[in-house]
Amino acid sequence: MTTTTLGVPATKSTQVPIRKPAGWASRRVRGIALTTVTWIAVLAFFFPVVWMVFTAFKPESQAATLPPTFAPDFTLDRFQAVFDRDMLPYLINSASASLGSTLLVLALAIPAAYALSVRPVKNVRDPLFFLISTKFMPVAASIIPVYMLLQAVGGLDNITWLTILYVGINLPIAVWMMRSFLAEVPREIIEAAQIDGAGLRTEIFRVVLPIVLPGVAAAGLICFIFAWNEFFLANLLTTQVARTTPPVLGSFVDGRGQFLSVLSAASTIAIVPVVIAGWVAQKQLVRGLAMGAIK
Image (cartoon, rainbow, N blue to C red):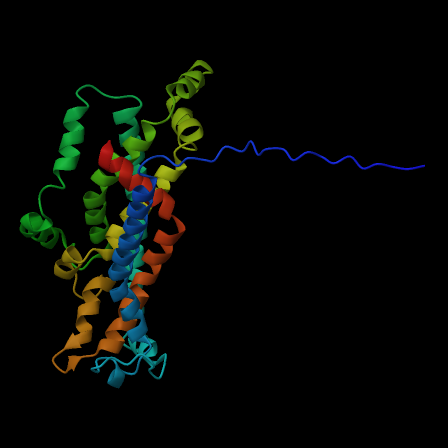
């Protein structure tokens, strides 16, 4: 028995070559160039911060040498020197004022934003403009009446009064941000809750608020960062008891000279809470800032 092998005729390839649209190469080159420029700008922006942290681990003798020392004798003595200068109470003051003011701001901003977006009151544009107009005036323009008022009530060098001032500064920003998030909540959900008999409190805290929790987190973090970094009021209205961290950093440069390693170590400690908070909630922060800018 013989077998025959039938040859399979070669088939002509029917694959159609993919034609790239006109200008594809130039757009790709522009995209790569834009990405490269963006990374260069980001690295240039963060380089001072990275160099500050690097300097904090150097001995003082190697902190300001020319050319700079890239392989120093790493040490933690500068951080110990910072706490030897009693910086811990100032960090506690900053945390108290920042956390306290942030909680108060959110407690006031959520119902205010709800009234301005979900259940708008009459002439809603006027209160909104008034809120944002308070940010037009620099803080320096109101420092004299604020100082005299606090002096009259015994509120100078008082962490409670400093917290209240931070509430007044950050409340307009929080209201505008929360209003942007609340305006995105579908009205059908709110109307369904109202049909089911939900009262105003249930409507806010059990229906609407869970939907806009990312917005609440973004507004809270921004208020916390602004309060933590605030320098002007803390420097003029506090002396010792209620002194916060930003004014204290300037005391590391005195008549004996600039102690760059100690100052870098203190600044590194001061930025840790803000960096951690911003890193954890970076998506909510970007979204909140973008919405606050366009709404």
